[in-house]
Length: 131
Image (cartoon, rainbow, N blue to C red; front, side):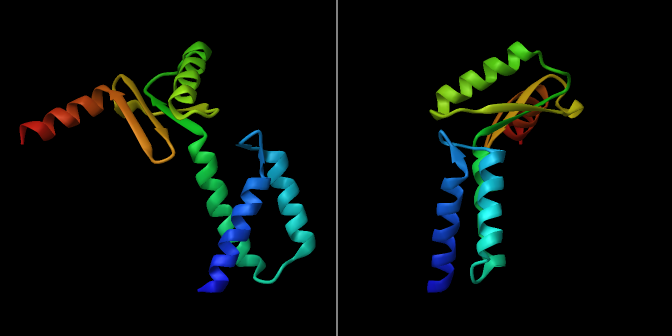
């Protein structure tokens, strides 16, 4: 068990090195992976797996996935980024995902948090309340 804690701690340090101004960047991740590949530390595969898990979580926490039935304007995406950046106290990048099942409105996921302002979501909540 001690060895796994060392791997997790090392992966956390690598994840921190992957950030620039608190944000994970492609360039930093490439640098970290290149250095890790050159060093090939013991339990290289386990370290990579732990690092990948942490990087995925970090990227998800700095990304607002905006699901909508129709395209959003650049201004709307910028407003979403600004609102969620203020809410979370960090830079948030908004990306869109088409989802015609929402009927109208939006659903936004930032990490594990989901904000649902869609007609489909409202209808679902209403149906659950009536049961």
